[in-house]
Length: 291
Image 1: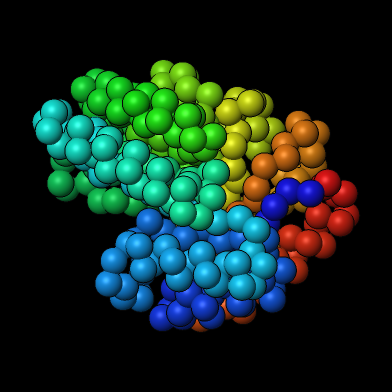
Image 2: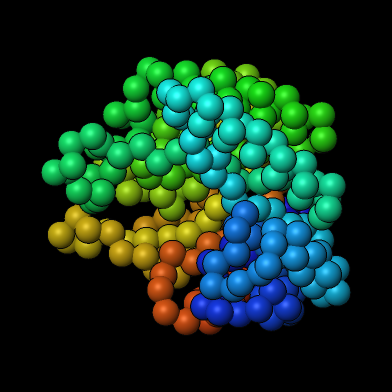
């Protein structure tokens, strides 16, 4: 059965690590995707943060811990900045693997915004990220993650680029191009179709899954709905435009056996959303027989 992971953004309103782990386990999640640095909670050091995660994940029986990690500076044309980003990333992945047994992380390059400051961040996300990335930025990202890929491969880890607005790996085509150029068995794609639908003329679900093929290492599930104004608004997992029943059927057809992470794109008190979304997911999993 695919492990079901809770994204930390369901519980970033000041909850302690103990509360987060206890609640995730009680709601039926197998693990949690944390951020590389804590949000809303203060720790004296990264070691203290990781120790709190290890202690409470073990205490409440969570079987998998993932992290989201951004290699800030990896697209830089300044060699010192670039090399520092690579070294920091390798050090982080080595630390969480050795300390917590982490085998998969959700990763990012630098944010790349359109150099024209008059162009807003949204709603047209195609004006940023891969569409404006320079050849030098592509080259730096590929070279850096080749080194990182070699290091994590030796640890038995895998990294997955999330398809996310304003990164080189923003669209399915761009993400696949990036992992193909890196060409490492340890580096693949985290399919966040909930982000992909914000792009006009995006690939359909079946086309996207087929494109990724064996490079599909991770899944993020969230949903949204397009209004008459063409603006998109976040919704519960079962209430938006993405048909997750079809989504799981397509995944089953390919034999995908990796983790599936549920994510909260909405604001406010997100804990009820976690209960609602995992209940919907478990109902679908039973209906589709995703084992």
